[in-house]
Length: 95
Length: 233
Image (cartoon, rainbow over all chains, first blue to last red; front, side, top):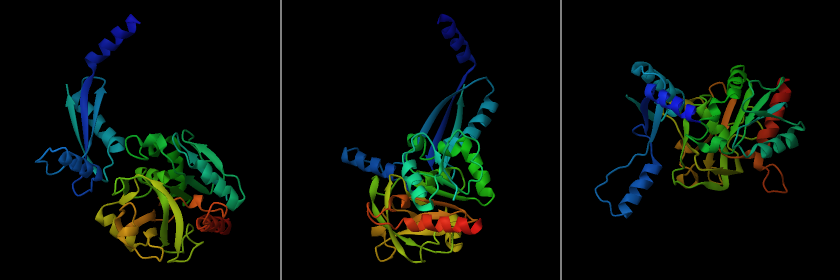
């Protein structure tokens, strides 16, 4: 048990944290964002002119090569995390 | 007809679909698990049923679309094999890139479970040969994300090439926003790929095939497929 914890600790040192943010392309209708916008208004939070809902993926990546990590994340986003018909994505690697 | 019905975790309409295929074709379909890499030998129709594959996690149909069996389906479709996707099956076909566009959250944000009217746009396809062009049929829908959309160029192409097979309509076949329940662009309920052998549709024709339950307007789709496949054989 202790050994496993120690091992995981070592992995963490070589891991990078990354974030992929997926947002709806402009021009794509966002009914959920619209509903949230309405709910904010009904809560008395004034001054919000528009809400668009998106998704955030916090990802840990093995190894320490940031450029490689970025390539990998772009692949992940293109292949699965985003539907590029309607969504854009942004990749950030945080060392 | 030798049909294969794909089964993914979270799919729940596969038995309705299998029952209808059996009832109308007289042949028992194979149930094919998502982790399989091959379709049963001799398969001439692949059906992706409705339900909530992977609990609609990430985006509806997204994870199922990347299952091992979908490579086999892609190969089958590339060779001209007939593929029918209903409801979640339509969403999976879009996510897999076998059909263009995407199914968004219904415009009114509600899950819609009701009977709808569909106008059949053409009858010269293997999927609609059991109907007349312009005929209005009554079938159920049950979905939260059926609001079809694609970029303007794609929609223009779908329309120009006559690839919209079904539209939500009034009982007398008029296209009207009041009868376009989920807000789909151009009231699109079902489309085919450029080759015409892959159909995705949100409504459930398989649920209206037995008089004991109600209307039988869904029969035409399956009866037409049986005819088309018999003719090809």
